[in-house]
Image 1: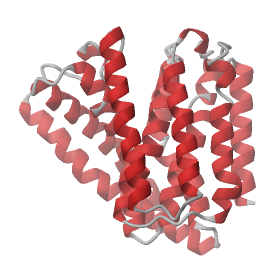
Image 2: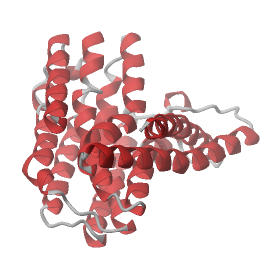
Image 3: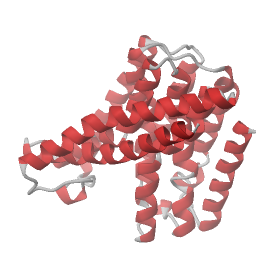
Image 4: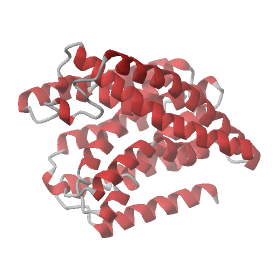
Length: 314
């Protein structure tokens, strides 16, 4: 048991550090190769920050624990809304009325509906995954087109996470090596430890994926949002959550579905998928109706997440 906990902790630490290194290396390599910062922000950074979830899901399927893969994505999306927005809102109000992210939010709702529909046609295999990846490609193309028109998304290197225009080549390569080696090792530790804990306590892999693994792989987004809240910039959390949720649904399961079939646990179809959908719909007043996410709302979001998690493990 102790070693399993150590595996989980070591895996999470490696995922956070290696994911950050991969983003920094990828951003600076792209800029050195002359790829516009606008495109880098919408593609390289978005994929890089979803790398921990992707590697965990792929590793879970390879370890014959597909329940962790699906639970990781669904649980991460629930945690992203209720925790990654809820905790920063307790620190500092999120002024969602001024963010103008309604287009991205509608994309997130569409991706959620598509994902749930495909789960009911599961198990998820290569053809489900193909549909999800086509949706991801269309979303990226739409984002790039919109950003080029409005020129208000990541137009400068300073706006990109990890960007350092003066970074030497050896540093870029070092970041990439650390990221590419650390991510699969961290994912392996996390999946092995989480699977053993699930078996030891008779908890399903899906529940472990929905809770322990989901929160663990959402730590980078949560940490970024909390730090931003202390700097009175909690608004950045909203775009982070929307982008991450779309990539989780379309990109991660889209790739993982080609690694192996992903069975859909009956509990997913009756409860967890609908909790994910409800969490997404909770944001309608704050994005489409222009209400702010205040401290009271933040407390309510966190309380809902705690109640949901308790209902899974009790």
